[in-house]
Amino acid sequence: MIIAIANQKGGVAKTTSTIALGGLLAEQGSCLIVDFDPQGNLTTGLGVRIQAGQVTAYEVLTNRNQSAATAIIETPSGIKLLPADISLTTGEKQILTVADNSRILRKKLNPLREEFDHILIDCPPSLGMLTLNALMAADMVLIPVQCQFLL
Image (tube, helix red, strand yellow):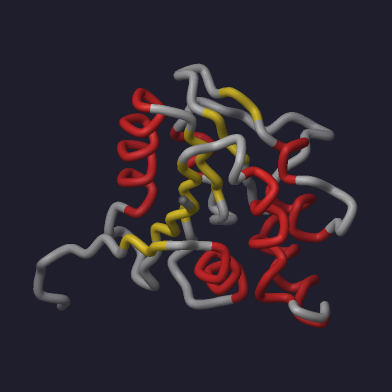
């Protein structure tokens, strides 16, 4: 099952929810967490520093020949991660002219369905192409919200 954790508002605990839920699901079975936010807070929150030449969500999104499996790493906590960094912002712009651009992530993650019981996608705080790709790839959507009055 693929679950997108999404909300166009920032600061509602999308990343924290993804880490917590991913940790719980990894204890029960196989779980992959996909950082699909150019801020890369999920990646750094799991103790990963992107190294030069490392395959990230950017390469997976923009390179038709790059499989998602090549980008997966194991974090210090033992959780499987497809990492991201600021380069993903460029990737979002690059796919705007690509045919069927809203289904790129779906096509990349579908081969991993057999390997992982759960795949969680941490979305950016927007309704842009990255979030649209995550929603198109997902079987379910988790929308964290904070119950507070906005000033």
